[in-house]
Length: 108
Image: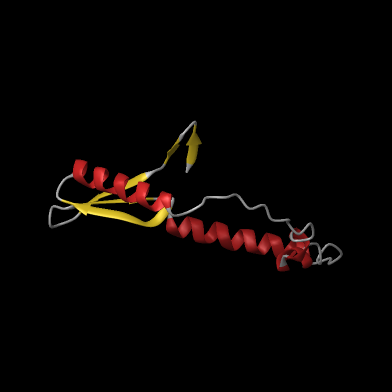
């Protein structure tokens, strides 16, 4: 939801059902929906539902600290560079590339 002066802007998802009814829902408030016979009725009903809901709730922002070491805790990062002194690693990479090239030529 985006605030503008004394109003908010929300994104609405409209879906036409097989039975001809229109379902309208607020993307930012998943439990706020309306099902009506027409697009206009669904939007109007959804608008009223959201206004009622906003009268009983409070929207706040919550700031959480990020762990500075989170990036270092990733499993793949712990194994990065373990083959840098392996004399056969370059050959291994070339074999992988040759195999990929072979697969690509078969799929073309």
